[in-house]
Amino acid sequence: MVDLKAMPYYLQEEDIRWVEETIASMTPEEKVGQLFFQLTASQEESYLRELAEDYHVGGCRYNPAPGEAVRRQNEILQKYAKVPLFIACNTEAGGDGACQDGIYIGAGIKIGATDRTDYARDLGRLANREAAAIGCNMAFSPVCDIVYNWENTEVISRAFGNDPERVARMSRAYIEGAHENAGFACVAKHFPGNGVDFRDAHLTNHVNSLSVEEWERGFGLVYRTLIENGLEGIMGGHIMLPEYARAIRPDIREEEMLPATLSYEIMTVLLREKLGFNGMVVTDASHMVAMTDRMTRREMLPLAINAGCDMFLFFNDPKEDFTTMLEAYRSGVISQQRMREALERILGLKAHLGLHRQQEAGNESSGGMAGAPREEAQALQKAISRDSLTLVKYKDAEVLPLTPQRYPRIMVVHIRGAENGMTAFKKMLGMGGENAAQKLISRLRAKGFDAFLYESPLDVMKQQAAEGIKPDLNIYFAGKNAIADFVKDMDLVITLCDVDLGRPVFGFSKGGGEIPWYVYEIPVVVIGCGQPTMLADIPQARTYINTYDAKDSTMDALVEALMKGPEAFPGRDPIDSFCGLWDTGI
Image (tube, rainbow, N blue to C red; front, top):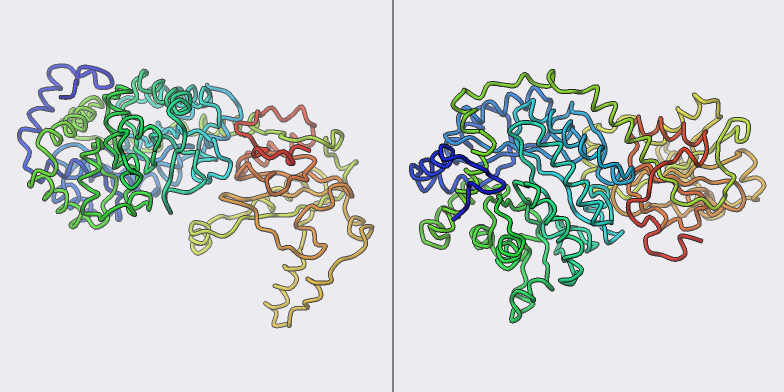
């Protein structure tokens, strides 16, 4: 079955005996429960106890809460668990993926821009030290996807870039850093590789269309590197890989092509047999449409296990999903052999992490966030913010540096993306605080610039409507004025593209300033402080900079660099920020 003495388990006889004896003592319900990773819906003790005692879950992930609340939650879960639980977090970019008061360090794309492997290693070490301090033992990280398609919004800011060698090197370093925390595992994602399709697997089908040879040169290189260096877990993505599936099974029909999480050809033949992965596999979230739109949920649950996944990520309805999986096991749809194999990997990894020994010792808390190296994480965040600043395009070669003497009055145009579910949710909860434009303006003013925010004709009309005044449509349709009048009140324009997902949204006001049509009339600096692909929609930009986020440390570093000049932008473009379009470079 599973070689528990081999990588990534390295178990001694005593630990193997614990695995075997635990499996032998399990009821069918306890075996089935180990297959599930649940997203906790409450931190109430009664709810957590039910998950552990009634559903026997193998692991939990949770939405970030204050560190002390998470620590207490994790203690409760382990207290009631007969078999110790995996407790996972999304520390892709820092300890903020483990708890609300954790330190954000930097997303993959930002670290990729520094091209410094030591930063990726320190991210893995420090982010997961915060996680370990509150009782987590597993990171659903790193994101080892490759950005082949600039229109992919799912991982473009989370992956380390578009170069397979860099992605492999930095993903490996992240894992090495995480492993400096004793008893901590990594689950790399999203196999067999996100970043080719422009579509989002949360919303629709997702296809990795690379040929076998292309896949081997890219994602094959990445996963072989990680597997050969002790990666414990892999998250299967709801991603079809048709060319490789056809190479494995030439007679496969298009209607039989399934996402990797449901595909025996991909999860067992490719991952297990061809790549030799001996570790544990968990599905990506089971509510994503790229998985749920292929068959009934009743068929889907056992098929994921039979395809080669060992754990199933998230109940839909706990009772319904648990019953479905239990019936599949009792009826033989999930065989005894397949169940045994999955349990050996799950319990083998728990033994590798020493969770069974911690349970025997009473699962004492590590002391919480007070023991985490927060000052070191904050210093790392500042260093990455400085070293990732990327001057992508610099056609107006003398526009930098910016000084109050050269450009006393600066207009900041704040461009945002379309409101999505997450931005609407944050707005509803009053989250967000000072926006990117406000941060930039306040810092420019502190340096002696007369910086102000552009008010579009549409903004004026909205304000009129809010005050009960009938909006003046002429402001929109006939609001143009002489070029001399437009530019007379400013010396430079900063177009700040604050777009987290997708494309920028412009007001399309006639002659307004939202779109920088005036790049030859007045100096313009375009800055992307979110998704780094704004040149696709603003190809006329003469000077274009990517900062990758709008954190305070990033804005501090940005203003300092703008005032020093082009040499103060050390970042290297981790993707093709010109988006493969010839006109973005002219």
